Image 1: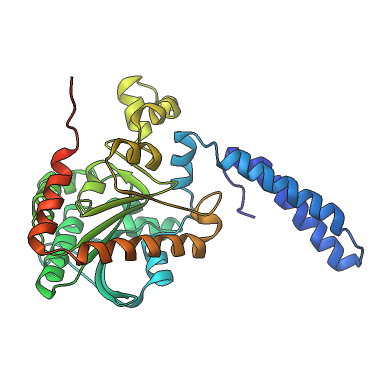
Image 2: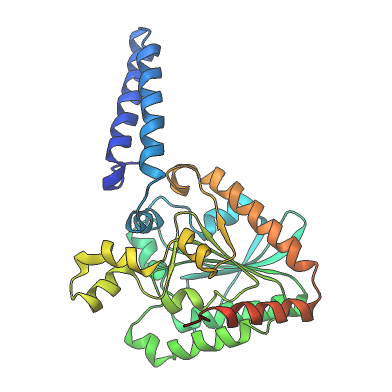
Length: 318
């Protein structure tokens, strides 16, 4: 059972609680209640499919922010081995909101880079809630260039509400750091696989989001602005966030249909937080498939395809 859960999960959590109670009662009192448990489990399965197969954009945003959802370090531990974290931008500081390091993914030696949120108040303050400063993006680019020099692929995990908008970050060149990454990532001669594993907010996501393959997990989102930010601008009312989410076309399903992303990564029914191991298995398969495809190309072909891919976004006929 997933704690208090989200509002739309309450019927599911209530059934899970009842099943749990009956199983505990059966174990302690030695009374056979298997037929009642089976009926509830059958009902639970139906309710799960009814709820999770008809999620609105706003509900998917809520799942993407679930506090138990796997983060970058979780996926690293679940699907990679021999991870060695690398630190610092050699200019100002080591931003804990972005993780960088060397790892092995089956037969591939890779550079893994990703946003990292915290599980509690103390860690969230350390990680700045996954919102990177300029030094975070400069650190990421530093290790992307190291990967290029070593001839190894890069895997980026995006999970941020946006880049940190504070005065200090602006003074140290937040916009310049992100813009510089966009330009440089377009030219890095190593395969780059990008996966949005949770929140994909604005320039904070784009700062490590240029790649040969852009994938988004089933209950993640990728958008120019958060639903709350959009609602505040358009309606001067943050409570309009569900309406904003609906019109922003920010879900993986909508982005795939529009050709903004290359692939949707399947999640367990109900979201990655309900079964992190299964979610990691789906994610690993997608990353490996795309790494093999990109690695088979020549560098010239890879860079041309990457450039053309982004040039096509936004082209339309009147």
